Image (cartoon, rainbow, N blue to C red; front, side, top):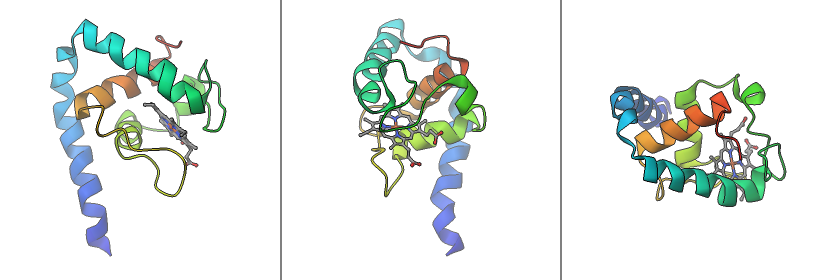
Length: 109
Ligand code: HEC
């Protein structure tokens, strides 16, 4: 049962170590990710990310989560809820970058 937790903690460590790669996301790729945030995430989390089918993704609400945890949620979704995994669309670094943007709130649509 405990072994079940292993992949998740391994992933978190991987994410933490990939922090240095954050700066390598090109501005074009950043724009693509933000486009996806507005159009795909927005369909559930609200056009202005203030909530809909999914909860609001505002800095105030997200302050309870460490950025790595948010990145894991984005990559793997929340099984048993409508939140889908975005692993096919984002690398670890990209998910971390997006989670950082959400927490800071500077790039809100
Ligand atoms: C099909 C609807 C849907 C889409 C599309 C969607 N989400 Fe979600 N998301 C949800 C739901 C529902 C939850 C709440 C899951 C739960 O009950 O724990 C959630 C939870 C989350 C959470 C955790 C927030 C918290 O406080 O619990 C984050 C972060 C998140 N989504 C980010 C995203 C991002 C980023 C995208 C786009 C890449 C996205 N979501 C697209 C439905 C969606």
